[in-house]
Length: 278
Image 1 (cartoon, one colour):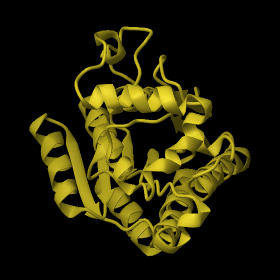
Image 2 (cartoon, rainbow, N blue to C red):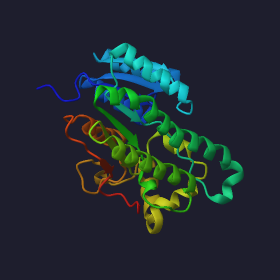
Image 3 (tube, rainbow, N blue to C red):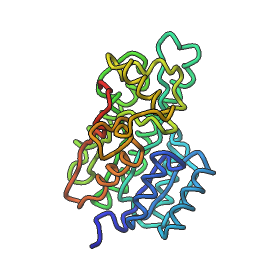
Image 4 (tube, one colour):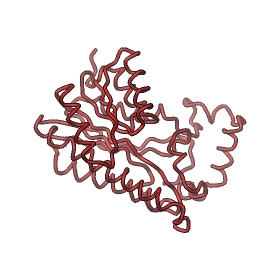
């Protein structure tokens, strides 16, 4: 049977790697037509190669989400190529965890975080808004984080940026209900992704681990050393500890792959055995 996602035109930012690349490939495999955007042109080329070699449809455009004109050009390319924009996935993001005392080395990364995580999402929404309204339907998927749930040490700027994503998303839902459906995805910690490389101070992760910092650190040390118990690494085990990117993106695709009349408004995706406190 055909699935609802088939033939939908889906724009994905941050598609040159990580979650964005997986979302693009998984949606294309289900018959969607993908418009991939990223500042990383080499990564974009690889994503498109992966899609087309698997028999899918996809195009790409180098896009800096901090530039509204870049997002407008991306939206125009999607419409010119495929005639519509059904889904906008605002995925591009950075995670510069750091304490306020780290401001000297963190300020540039914090500024970039605000530009990408907040302005990038705003730009993405605005760039597709009129097209979706004129079509009479659309779907915006914004990647937030459990860090947006509550303020903690080490995540002032990152957490604030994700709280802003939640506000932008809910405001759009209220304004455009019946025309644009909105999904907020709040991933928990996904350790084996490129986001880890944007952390300024590794000790700042204490905010998400709280009273479980010691056990969490010890468990990740076991995993990295190849000494973790098998059940910790088994997705079919209730003790599964570190959420993998595939499992997260499967839920994003699930939210997209719904009839137009069904909206998954928000979803938090966790590993069942994790020890994060947010």
